[in-house]
Image (tube, rainbow, N blue to C red; front, side, top):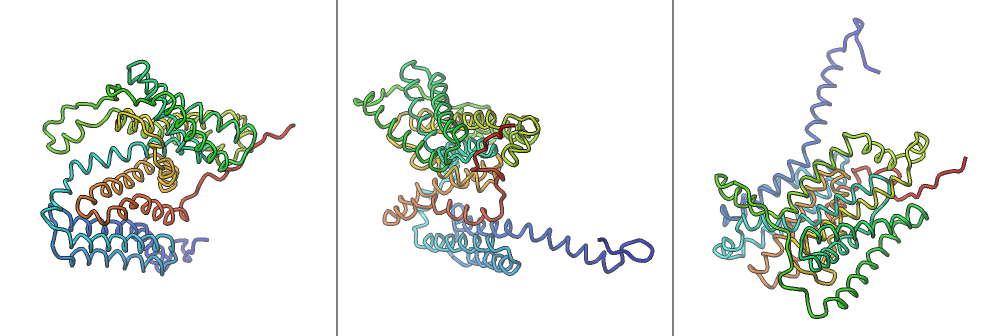
Length: 412
C-alpha cells in the first residue's frame, strides 16, 4: 500500500524514502560491473603498451574490487561477493607474477591484434555450442551432449569435404551429422522419457567412440593435406587500421555465428514460435492445453540444437585446424554449457561468456613463452574461469522451470 498524506499525495518523508531506495537499488545493480571494471583496469595497467613496472596502481584497483565485494557480502548478495573475491585473488596472483617477467619479453608476447584474433577463433566453437544449448534448454531439454554433437560435426565435415572436395558439402554433412545425433538423443529423452543427464553423457561417449573408430578405419594413412577449408572473408576495412585488419581476416563461420546470435535472439523474444518454445520450457502442461505440440517441438529443438553445436565442430575441423584429430573438441562442449548458464540462457549473453573463455584460452596459449615452468598451471585458466563463472552466477539466474523434466501427455 502506498503511503499518502491527507490530500492524497505522497508525504515528503515517503517521497524521500522511495527516492533513496531507488537510488541505492540502482547503484547496487552497478556494483558488480564496477568491480569487474576495476579488475580489468588492474590487468590492463600491467600489460603492454602501458606495462607499469610498479604493482601499486594495479594493487589499488584490486583493493577497490575487494572493497566492493565486501559491500555486496554485507548486503546479502553472497554469490556476487564471493565471485568478486575469487576473481580478485586470481587476478592479484597473475599480476604479481607479471612483475617478475622481463618487460621486453612481455612486449614481444602480448601483441593485441594476434591476441584478439586468437580470442575470436577460440571463442567461436564455444559460442556455437552454447547457442545450440540455448535452443534446446529453452524447450525444457537439458542437453549435456553438446560435446558429442560438436565432435560428430567436426569429423563428418572432414569426411564430406574430403569426398566431394567442397567445404560447402563438408559444412552440410557436419551439420547433418550433428542433427542426427541430436535426434537420437531426443528420441531417448523426449519420446521415451529417459534421464537427460545420463543420455547426454552416453551421447558424448558414443560420439567419441564412433568418430575415433571411423577415423582410424578410414584415415589410417592420414587426411589429405589439401582438404578444402572454409574461407576467410576479405572486407574493405583498410581505413580502420589494426581493427580493420582484424575484421578483414575473420573466417566465414565467425560472421555466421554473429548472424546466428542476432537471428536466435529475434526468434526467442520477438516471434510467436519462439514464445511457444519458451512456454514449453516453463509450463509444458499449460502449453499443451493451449494446443502447442510439446513433444514435437522438443524433438525439433533438440535436433536443431545438435545442428548448431555441430557448426562449432565444423569450424574447428575446416575453419581452424583444417583436419581432424581424435577428441579434438577437448571439452569445449562442457565449457559451452557453462557459457550458456553464465549467459542466463540468452544468445547475446552466451556470446559474451564464450568470448570471456576465449580470452582466458588465448592468454594461456601465450604464457608458456614467458615462463615455461608455469605452462601447465596457466593452461587450466579457461576451466578455472568456467568454475568461477558458474559458481558466481548460477545462484542468480533462473533456468527454464521445466528443464530436465520429461513430459508425457495425459490421455483424455
